[in-house]
Amino acid sequence: MAFFWTKQAFSAEIIAVSSRKIQPIVAFLGRRRDFLAKNNIEMEKYKCIIIDDDRYAIDSLAAYINAMPNLELVKSYESPVKALVDFQDIPPVDLILLDIHMPQMTGIQLSKSIRSKTQKLIFTTSYTQYGYEAFEVEADGYLLKPFTLQKFMATVTKTLADLKFLPPAGPEMEEYFFVKNKHEQHRLVKVWHRDIVAVESQQNYVLLHTVQKKVLTYMSLREIARTLTKYPDFVQFQRSFIIAKSHIESITGNSVRMDNGLEFTVGDVYRNSFQQFIQNKLLKTCQNPS
Image (tube, rainbow, N blue to C red; front, side):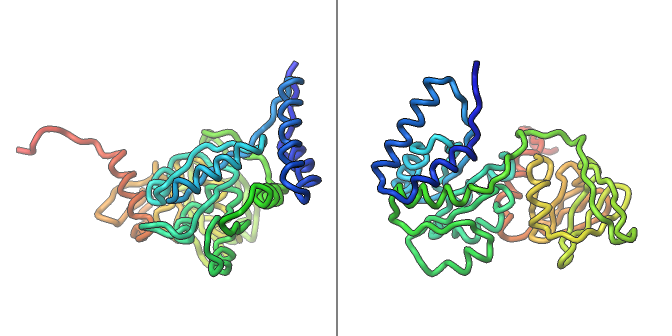
C-alpha cells in the first residue's frame, strides 16, 4: 500500500533544522529519503524552473534542488527569450529561480511577463541594487550569489511555506467562476472560461469582455492572470490585456482584432512570443502564388 506525504509536511520538518549547520541538514535529507523509499511513501513535489544565462549557475541550482526531496526541476533555460516563448504554452509551476543580469532581456523585464505563470518567484543574482525592482514585480525572495545550500534551503522553504496546490495541467474550458459585476450593482455573475474574449485592465478593476456582455469587477489584471493563464487558451500579448487565442479574428502586423471587435497592439516585450505564436499557427504552402 502506498502512502502519501505532503510537501507541506516536509517543509515543516525542514524548518526545524534549517538554522543548523549544513551537515545535519544533509543527514536529515538522506534519512528522510531512505524512510520514504523503505515505507513506499510517495511525496508531492514542488515544480521548479531555473532561468540563468550561466550554465555553471544552473548546474549548481539543479544540484541544490536535487538535494531537497520535495522539489522537482522540470526545466532550465539559459536564454530568457526562449523562456518567454515557451511560457506561453507550458502549465504554471510552483517556483521560478530567476537570474537578473542576462543578455537580450533582464530578469526584471522577463518577470513582468511570466509572473502569473508561477506561484513563487526568487531572484538569484550577484547584484544587490535590484531590491526595489524585485519588490515591484512581487518577487518572494532574493538570493545573493554565491549562496550555500543551507541558505538556499532556508529561503526556499520559507518561500514555499504557504503555497497552495496547483490544479492538474490541461484543465478543460468547461469551467466557470463567479465575480461581482459593478455594472449590475455588484451582483455575483457566472463567467464561463469559454465565453471570455479578453480581460482588460482598468486601474483597480478588470473588464471582462465576454461573448454576451462586459463584466467589470474589482481585481487587478495580475490577480486574474494567475487563474486564467493556467489554461492554454489564455495568453498575454499586451500589458493591459489577457486574451483568448480562440477568439482572435484577424492579425495585421502587430495589431490584433478579436471577434467582438476589440483591437489592441502587441507590446514590445511580447513581440517574440507573439511571432512564435503566429509561426506555430500559420498554415503554409510550398507553392509559389501565381
